[in-house]
Image: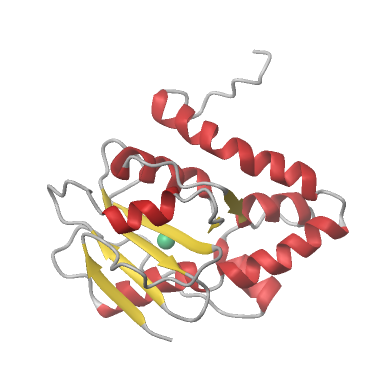
Length: 205
Ligand code: MN
């Protein structure tokens, strides 16, 4: 269980084959304005890798981009819509195919409106996740220990959540509909970037 910190790209061949958990930290919620500072990625074997981008970065990151763009590798996210847009905008790749634990939660945990990662990890896995560093300065020259721990913990439980939530989608007969939603996420992220962030294009009025 180690958190590895890398500048500007992932080293080659540090990830085992199979699904990867992915999260991003940015300067804020407006993707074209608020630069991508950190990409966290884990193969679910116990280590997390943090890739940091400094101001003015060209976001070349060939190793990271090739993992994210690999159509054979499932990417696990919590609220994929935001991460897909940030990755597309800054790294220039669509990081699909996707399983989103937030969408899965909305489709199976219909008895609650609490679909945050912390709540989900607590209920489904019985583990505690710190959210204390969520609103912190990810653009600082030094990413401190508390920030690293927080950033790594955001990808730490996604493989276990994926297994548990997938089984519950099957149990409730919603696996296929969930998959259709996951498959739409790249288009949803592109709509966000293209100027339809809050407009429901399916709405009548
Ligand atoms: Mn995060």
